[in-house]
Image (cartoon, rainbow, N blue to C red; front, side, top):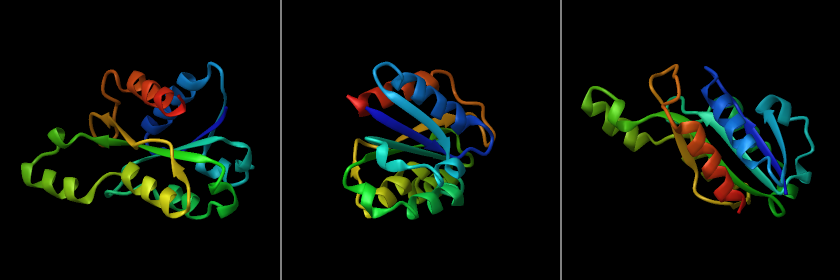
Length: 157
């Protein structure tokens, strides 16, 4: 299977997750890891699966990620499956408590990316995933890179 892992990263945490996903899928697959900027010029029609990730910024993916997904050509959406991931602060780590409700209501980037992919006509390969960081700039919480690789392997199975 030819898999594209496409991501945007602000503090490097989403890049780490994208790398873990690619490494988790490397056995038996061809995996290309690209930033959203690099992916704009790539031929995406050769992929069987696209996995797109972004940090959560104001309940949404980065503008570069949103623009990338919005610009995907309908000609590839029928043949390529897709899924999304994000990096995020866990609800339990958000203080004060009333702010948790705002974040829960606003959502996370993976949900928005999945919705955009579905609107573009992609068949979703599975449920989107969120990988937790310890603060705005990270680092990733312990075990998140392993969990990312496991999630990706389940998508490709």
